[in-house]
Image 1: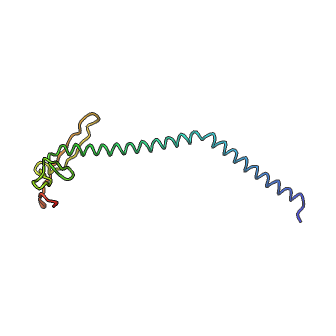
Image 2: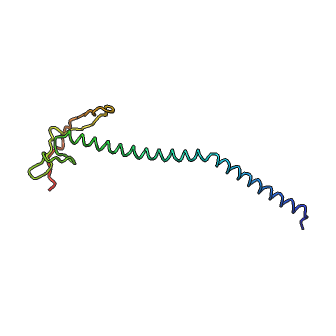
Image 3: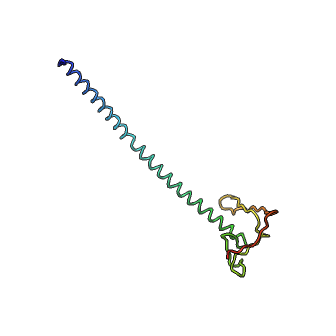
Length: 136
């Protein structure tokens, strides 16, 4: 059988450990409470950054759409998705202008407020020759 002194010592040790745990928890809570504004600011900054990235992606997408529109206006023909009523065959098919538009086109950004510069490199076909096709 245990002596009352040993039994009491074990209870006191357990109580002291529990008090230490409670004290540590209280200190951690006080630290978290003190730094909560920083976490809130970081969370808000993260949300603002995510919103900015979404707006930027939408602006880039819109910019690409506008560049395609400029390219479509520059091409005086019907080709691919650029169907123009004034350039069609009697059957209503797209009529291409291979002599003028068998080329690689690239638009160079010239800065805000300045129109883009068109770069054009003619394509030369040696094995496969261009032909008008019908989708009917």
